[in-house]
Image (cartoon, rainbow, N blue to C red; front, side):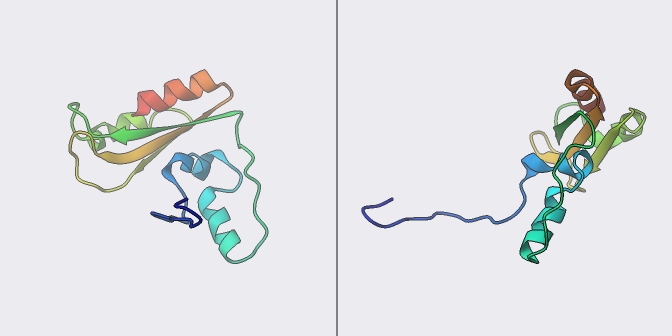
Length: 115
């Protein structure tokens, strides 16, 4: 607020990357629910598909291009890899990994192993 006026710097009425886990982790993803909301359709369930869903960002590091490690990541049970097609460089977000499990520690281990 500035005096009696509301000042807005930015509005971003879109899904957010912190909710990308919902693609595999929820009955209805944040992307589908955004479309449903825009179309004035009933929202879908955001209930988890497994007791635990963990998402970890794939960020460029000194370990090199993460696409080189993709075959190994795909061997891990209940892990879903999303690479965004961006060129690799240290510190750049290149994708994310979502892991599902019956236990949050197991899901976390799977996600980090895949990254």
